[in-house]
Amino acid sequence: MVIQLFYDRVLIKRKPPDETVRGGIIIPDIAKTRPQEGDVLAVGPGRADATLGWRTPQVRVGDRVLFSKYAGIELKLPDDDGDYIILREEDILGKFPKPGEGIPCESPQKGMAMLF
Image (cartoon, rainbow, N blue to C red; front, side, top):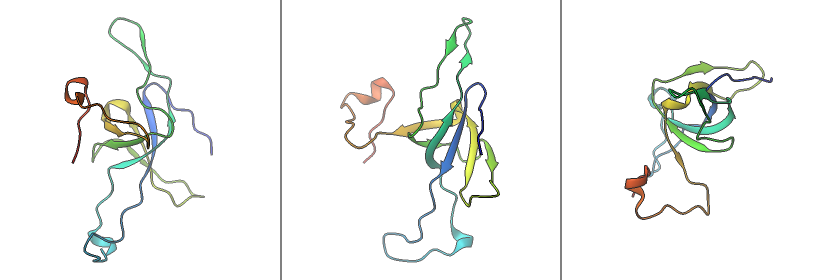
């Protein structure tokens, strides 16, 4: 299936939920929460900004992102068992660095936070 996204829409495939926790306890299906992270599969061309210019999206295909819990539109494809969501770029809270990418120490001033 091919989909063309408009404006600043982003198609994300949710990360599958973890089956167990650190202590080895198996979580039943009813108690599992839906993950708020996933991989970007497609990105729209962007949107117009206040100065009548064009603002390109900050995420790219292949980025792993963290998004708002109740944002977007759920999408189920009949020939796939994946869990997809289409949302606006502004509903993305951040993206995880790819392996090999460093996070600078002065990051809180530049819009990035270090999580320990």
